[in-house]
Image (cartoon, rainbow, N blue to C red; front, side):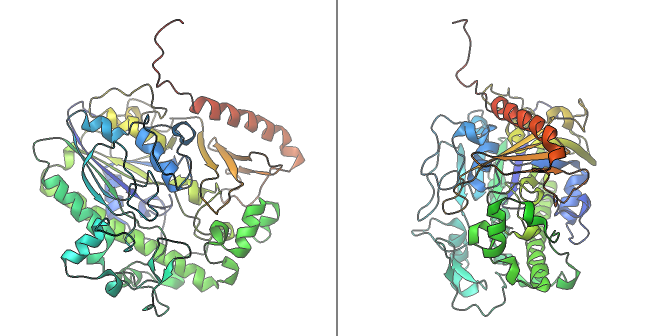
Amino acid sequence: MSEKHVNIVWFCTDQQRWDTIHCMGNPYIETPNLDRLAASGVAFANCYTQSPVCTPSRACFLTGRYPRTTKVFYNGNDNFPKDETLVTRLFADRDYTCGLVGKLHLTSPQGRMEKRTDDGYSFFKWSHHPHNDWPNGENDYQNWLRSKGKCWEEIYGGRYTSMSRWLPIENPGFHGKEIGVPAELHQTTWCVEEAMEFISQSEGKPWLISINPFDPHPPLDPPQEYKDRLKVEDMPLPLWKEGELEHKPPHQQKDYVIGGQNGATDSITLLSEMDQREKIRDYYAEIELIDDQVGRLMDYLEETGQRENTVFIFTSDHGEMSGDHGLYWKGGYFYEGLVHVPLIISCPGTILEGVVSNALVELADLAPTILEPAGYEVPDSMQGKSLAGLLKGEADIHIHKNSVYCEYYNCMMGCHEDIYGTMYYDGRYKLVNYAGKEWGELYDLKEDPHEFENLWDRPDMAALRADLMKKSYDQAIMNNLDFSMDKKFEY
């Protein structure tokens, strides 16, 4: 990547699994535009989030610092730490125009528009989720609908008209069939329209746009026309092996019976195989809508002559269980479906093209990565490791880190509040240690890629488990070293 000023598109979906892109091996979904993006850049096959829930993950990748360090390791926080600096603030300080469309979620949006930190965004179109849950025009997507003469409650064909509380508010017009809203009125569509408006206003200065649609986060209510593209009977079933939960942690056994996320979702025990396939169909339909909008934005950049001077990042904050192991949504789990996320980085003519990297990388690496092509030094305070050398072909494309790290420390109110778990994964073995618990998880993903067999209690795995526990401890300490106080003197 050159050191000239480049523009940056940072497209972050919400709750999208790593295995939901056609060119990366999923035969059930069509994502021609994400495939096109990957063909023009580097697709990372092994990217991991540092938290399986929203706020700590987003705080991490926007600061380049791990959740435990930022102190933002749970959803629902009232404030964002004043001593944490977002990478967007650094860009704004260097004459970039920075904008955000959609979700931010660095603080709680419950019953209010979330409190902003000094984030550097001069263009700010906020919509945490599409539902009409905030007063006084705070949800900019709802303002957009009203400007078109549309009423959310009249066009929305989903089960819930509000997500502002739990349990959500039922839609009185719901007749048992989710139809979402028409694609042209969808929040994901709005996100891209606002992003293009921002770009059109930024001529003459380098810009960064952060695009954060709510999709494919539940409730799964894609436009009907996207559901019609996919046949339910053709969809795969969730990953499941009879008897696997007998050796899994108690909170997973409980959620299998009462519903994922500690009872917030449907229990898979009450769903037929066709119901399970339908949920996957709806999830894929939402992602196909995302794909169309990614393509629309790529076309716009090409038409305006900005594509080759724009770093385009596509990723997600965390994944979704999708029924795997009998679980839905998210929580104190560390399965691949939840912690393994997509990552594609493209800038035609300046980074490698059409390459798939098998390197272990983390979302914490994104902030330092985007500073480098813009010609800026990475602050000592950032704990992530820049991917720039891989992207430019100056380092082995398949080697970056020896292991990846993820944590869940009582991250959500009312869900797994006794779970304080840390994941260590070295590309073969995954160890999950739950603080204060006798049980844990250990998987050999080379022999058991679907994580059916928990090896934690096997006597023949005791030495391996002890070795991985030491490595996990070391990693947690070393990852969270903080040099932000600027060590300069001998004493």
